Length: 203
Ligand SMILES: Nc1nc2c(ncn2[C@@H]2O[C@H](COP(=O)(O)OP(=O)(O)OP(=O)(O)O)[C@@H](O)[C@H]2O)c(=O)[nH]1
Ligand SMILES: [Mg+2]
Image (tube, rainbow, N blue to C red; front, side, top):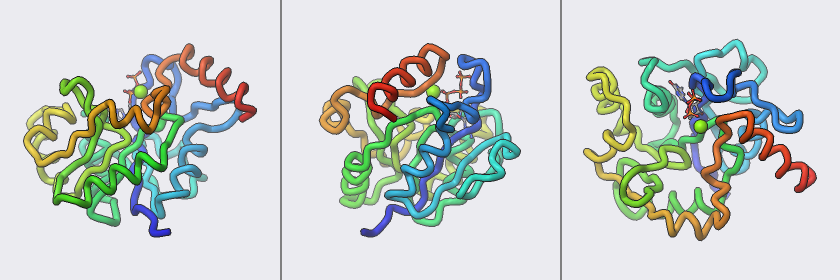
């Protein structure tokens, strides 16, 4: 099987809701970042973790890099991740999202390959996008740079100016009926819930 190139795993946030660095998040003693990396390697041949605490990541089996234009949230990470990406498109993931859906990744990739687009992301109510589980083109590197330097940080705000493919929520739900795909672990309560879920699955 041809693998999908570079996956960009963002791990540079503030973790203010969790109260400790989510890069250290363990679910039933499994380090979530490592778990995600191993899963991503099933379909990607290259992974870049974007972190502002590289000392947490000395033993990871992939490349790590820091934000080049820090302080603007996920878009800072997407920017440097795309610079490091080996192919035209990078797949962007968050370090607090435990579920990866290989069929959905293949679907996004297929959709993207039909047109020459700048990004392919999921949209909700035509109002806001989910920046993760999406593909972004290297063509966005310079525009993101300008955008960040003008003090803006909204991923959707940026993509509106480009040729983006927006996948409707209904389609994403066909791949993830219980919406696991977009679950992200922000609080200790989220963590407890996931631990219970994984224990029930014997993970
Ligand atoms: N590289 C990088 N990643 C970021 C940055 N801000 C957020 N992220 C990542 O983006 C993903 C989503 O972050 P959130 O859960 O919304 O925010 P957070 O800052 O980590 O946590 P809160 O402070 O609780 O909002 C996570 O994987 C974060 O690690 C940033 O400035 N740089
Ligand atoms: Mg989150």
